Length: 323
Image (cartoon, rainbow, N blue to C red; front, side):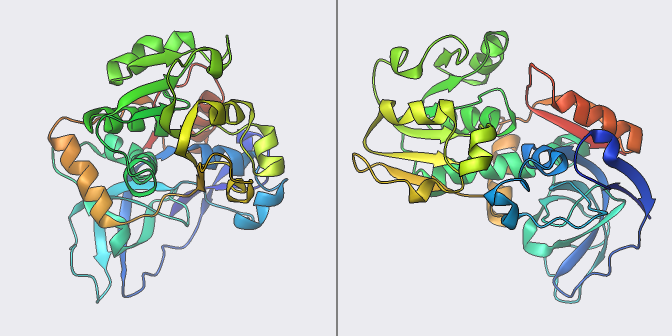
């Protein structure tokens, strides 16, 4: 079968098409024919080698050729003998740790959810990683309550644009950072305030402290130290005593000395069917949608173009890879 593999760190042209074996599924797994996937920041940072150059490299072991991609949407082709929720022909989406830029992907049953006919494969292929990350950040780690104030960094990005919608529909007051060119986009998602992080410091723009900060932005110092970058450091000053600083990028944040009883939390999304099904219900109830910025074909050239696009500004939502 066809796979698009990473042959070395660096430029997108390090991706090339190769023939690989169809995965042999375990008893608890489902073989999914991939119809759509997407690009996440983690894919970009692994491809470039940025993660591997710092202390976080131990968390992401890469042996070439390496297959990128955390998201998959497609049709079930085969199920393991212990699988109970799916059968061949079902439409599904999920999050995988082993790469999805290939024709067939082996996925644990609990990492998948059935998708309705009303949800396209392209939208479903953009959803799992960013939606799970936003959902778990807000509700599992943040314990977001109606009426609380939340600051979401990178509101126009994949996780950010999902988090704005989910926080707003949960009754929170949402402040987000975004470039001026993305102001209208994030306001239409539900943001109550938009801060252009390129113009002024947060502490000068937020008049009332927030209960939660969700940090989705990594800079070079984050990979070097595991601690928040420039934007993140400024966020502590606008958090309430006893607030929560949640980061999906600053992996050493838990080692930071505690101040003003603020909880500093780093986490990575955990694939599970229950959360995916909750997200799908929100989509069906028209409380949440995924924004697909661009789609590219599942070819080596298509991946080159998609990754080049991912390096450009402005960024909005997700970039999708589609068969």
